[in-house]
Length: 400
Length: 224
Image 1 (cartoon, rainbow over the protein chains, first blue to last red):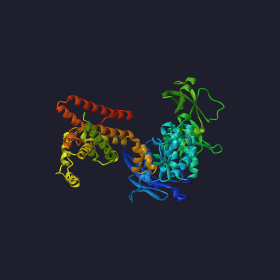
Image 2: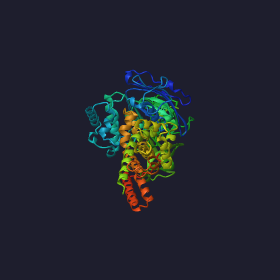
Image 3: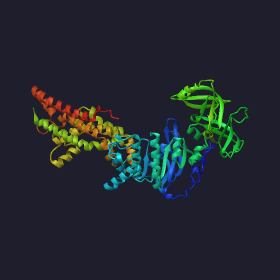
Image 4: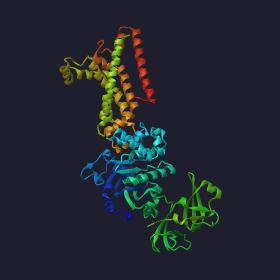
């Protein structure tokens, strides 16, 4: 899928999953992970239907979706820890599961690495013993040398003789990754392995994973519900929503200009507006959109947004995260932001440590997130006149 | 103080609790991981000796070991004597009598091993049996010690089953609790007192070791 086609399923006319089959790859077939499966299981809202079909090539493929989208179940099925109802899972042409041929290789014979949010280190073994655990077929000396090599590679060789309780969270996750990778799996499944880590730990782990992947070209399925991880890691992203693939493509295509509202909501846009394209400024890489439902309203808010493939007069949706908006009590000057809108605060609401301000700008209501300190410093309150500052690139465009 | 009865009892308890490790682990493994729908029936059967009067258990064991039952006849053809009223018969009766005291802590500790570890082990290429040996057993040490000690202590104090199956043959089947009963029957209270006190102290020591090792309260069932 190097061409970067974005598979989109229309909201009003559902397309059966098999039709969204990815195009045949130009890569050597030996590395590919092919997954086509259905699984129904009861969940609190009734019956959950997982129905997916995709091919993951060597490199990172991000599985992106809200919790409950079926990501973990999907990984469990690939790993052999859960059985699909029907379908086929193959890697490098070898079938791991095929419901028609009644083939179902047990998890321990699949040679697929699986690391979850909980590193699940064996508490009675040292870090080195944990890493060597999957190398049982090798001689003791070989086990030791390989374990030490990968511990060094993941910069945790000093933890060698420590047991999991004496290892910090981020380092435990490193050990878990090393333990999975040392076995040279044919594919790697990562279920939010970074979710519990702080940002610096996260990015250094990601860098190490990337480096490792350059030498070991295997498919890596990486589950996350954090948009930023999609950009940091993904060569390819698959968006999963309630058990179905709703979008697939390169991260900037699927994520930067979300084509579906479900994607936008997943990415956490508090502000979603209907908009009409007024003018294209190709020289500047921007365009002007008027917010509103289509009727030409006199004072309607106009926003300068990034340029996407659209024509003047076409209708779009604009999504803006509440945390990306600024509030000013005086008209700001010398600012790079292109959109400075006068408005009036309608309501302030405290949510935990965030202040959500509802600001009315000529009939369009924006939700703006502020800190408690900002509210106090600016003496914000209902009916106060403010300016809402919207950066062009904080405006995310979607089709309708 | 009847030292012969004391050592006979200790020997019986040691043999029974050791055998119960070998017998109890597979049963507990099956009870922990089987998804058979009628598993609860086996669970109930294993737990029966906890609630059954020892005389009832002893009666059935006696019948099963006697020369009228297939087991009894088979043993007789093998050894030339019946199993009833022998030390071997006592071992068999005690194995059944103390089975839940080994199996339940075993199964509880197997079941307490985090399933995430089992999944991790599988994805690292280990079969369920290999996983059991390398992950579950080492992490169930406390449960194994508990099961061993409880079945040891429980066998030390048994009375009804022994009386039914073994009778009261000095040096063969006369255990310490039967000895105490005998002494009381013959109004020999001071000797009974000594023996009873010894049994009390030994039982207390065994349980102290268990609780000391586990450092957490453990009660006999319900266990999952």
